[in-house]
Image (cartoon, rainbow, N blue to C red):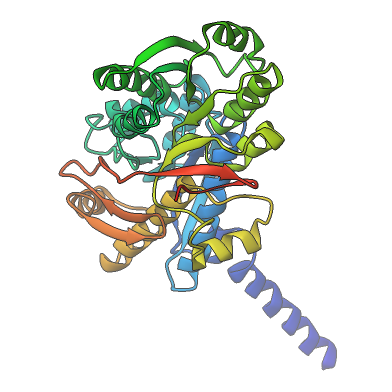
Length: 377
């Protein structure tokens, strides 16, 4: 009799594990399958890791509230060809109704038409203005990059920096646009860009040749529109060859890879950044993140991804959408939900325009000090 009871008990335990253990899709038949197309490898892998970490935290928190997401992660490598192949898998094989896209504007632009054609909701964390009119299923989740450059142009001029050099990543659409906008804005307010060069971060990781050329020109400051990884190496190599000019950059520099690359030369670099920060005002999100992923500095990209997943959770809950699929009618409801919507989350206030895009944000200045960017006082 005892053997029979034990056998029954074991069967019950196995059934419970099948229901509550394993992957999210195994845990709940009502879990909504969504995709995540992130730069898990390649030049923007640090950003991709931050986004994935944040999405994990958001999905776990929602699951405690009864909203289940089964996330299928795919690697974009911030590369157009790789990203398009991964997008086709998410659309045709995994058949996900919506996808969160990580940083990498060139990759996002490459896959946007496929998601639009497949009626797959796409939320790219990208700031290229070209995504604003990419279609009704595309919801750009970052401010337009051209809104970040005017504040830095004004800042440099007020600091007496009239001759500035610019280095940018030519393999990124956002970086190219940002560099061009900065040049136009800086010269409009009376400055002069005396050095303007791009590089392909997919193949270049030694910048001494360009920096030596820059040294001969001797500008007052160097402005970078690059990834955190490239920027850290540029700062270190610049200091090693004797460049003492002011180093400045855009918000993309704020991350762990920048400090790893720059080492002891990081201090003093000034950037424009969004108000979100775990350095000056730690939040419950920051504490949870750093307790779980101690080796990472929480970035704005992950914070925005956390808000996207949380907001999606709120939307499906309010609309009583159940998994695993989202039909065309429910997609239309979600499109309406993300039009002219405002949401206050861990990244700040997200304000969607009439097309469901994030367009404008406020910016502040931060300076690198002791391994993190802190507010300029």
